[in-house]
Image 1 (cartoon, rainbow, N blue to C red):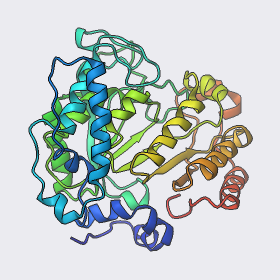
Image 2 (image 1 turned 90 degrees about the vertical axis):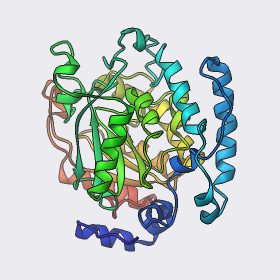
Image 3 (image 1 turned 180 degrees about the horizontal axis):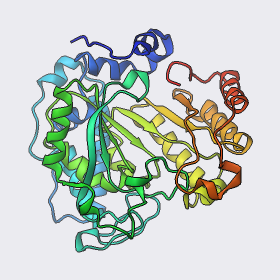
Length: 370
């Protein structure tokens, strides 16, 4: 099924040979010539019990991942003929996610709180998930629009310059989450995805805040989703290894932020430890083990070209070369950024030019999506 682009730059982007090559499977899902990964996962039968230990479920998850990757080599005709199983790879992952929720380790903060019993970690998200809005987004990267974007309340970061601070953190300690966002269970989330698809979304885009605290709800919603549509993970990407393992085979397209080229800047501006080490680890995993269809968003910050932008681009060119990069000039000193003189302005034209020229020098594909 062909589709109509709503932004002129989408057509030109898809004419770029590297975009066509690197995002070929995503485009085939849009055209209904390929099957979304989560639908394939639902045909993979898995023998497990709800009472199984975390260790047993983790071992079964690894086994299912191997079997899933073997399925990807099958023809589309054969994949379309497969039947959905009652106990499958998705239901296994959803069961394990619920187990993790009792001692939450979805992100690398590893708060280890029992969210099922009402405890809350840094993100302050309880057992339930809360959605602030869901709509067709026309401002995402050209190849992604219109994007069926679902915004979750809350975030595991504390960025002083956050542009979505109203849903990520400004409410913390002031208002109860239920007062400002709508509670959504897995069926609600699946229904939302279905509505967005019917309106013309090319993908289901999980964002926030950040989707990481909502891993359990998102995975469980895939049990109810039936549409052949790309699943897109739009995140700060501070996932734990366990958290990433839960979704690495189900996500068709990845849209990670890569803000800082070192750990110190991340600590100063986002209250995060070991940021660079964790981000690079996770990016290498989705590049090597996941779909490898990735747009990395790099927000250029003033006075952070040498310490952040260039090291990030060096890593991308050397370690994850199949990625496409959106070099973003949208930084503005929002929220508490005024307290930091060095970032209390927008990046200059010269700074943006320097970053883009450096990316081009390294052979990074950025122009079609920036």
